[in-house]
Amino acid sequence: MKSRDFSRSLWVFHLNTGSCNGCDIEILAALTPRYDVERFGMKLVGSPRHADVLLVTGPVTRDMEDKLKRVYAQTPDPKVVMVVGNCGNTGDVFYESYNLAGPADRLIPVDVYVPGCPPRPEAVIYGVVKAWKLLEEGKRR
Image 1 (cartoon, helix red, strand yellow):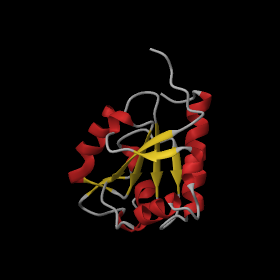
Image 2: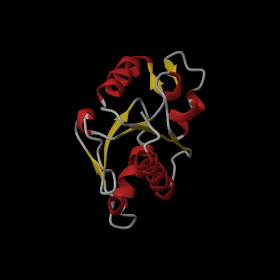
Image 3: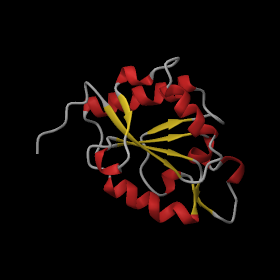
Image 4: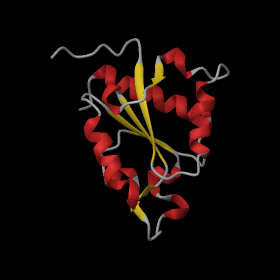
């Protein structure tokens, strides 16, 4: 199978695994003309089967644990997993919650971490650029 050329675009599937939507709003802000992350070719897609990047927000609740693993398996290789926000990275204030399966990196391999509560759009763009570079260099699965 011929490898895909990432010099033009990144197709991103966004999965909210239990967040407060603060990070989701900042991701949408990064897509607006003010920040224009689309200049790097980022496009949100509706299916993980079309994605190059799996973007995860929120702490992974027990209800979402299996769904996250299934979406990860459905994302074709090569792929990059990007976790946006403190909740997805560490669990943050929900760290010892009875309903938390853990931060995303306990369940799937994570390549790019974007810290913040919520992270600013500039941080999200920096994470997108890191994901793009990983895919361009061919250093991911």
